[in-house]
Length: 68
Image (tube, rainbow, N blue to C red; front, side):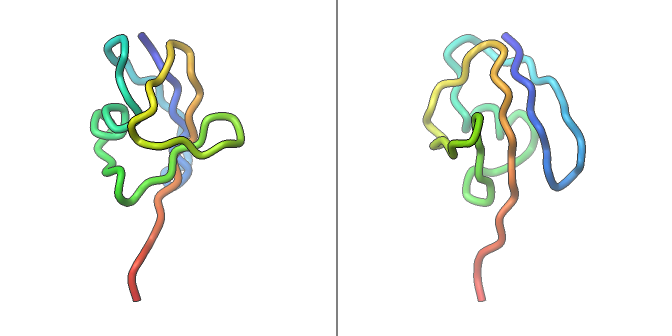
């Protein structure tokens, strides 16, 4: 199945081919991002890394900075 991912930091939109039943965590891994440094939004709602994605989903990924 395919999901579309809007990578805010890179100012680009990509399509990712993933297996049925994949989670947000697996999508992030496939694109080389880590869940601990990312916020994923579906529509206008942030979703947890263990949420399953569906064919045709449009996800927006924001990288976040933490620390002091």
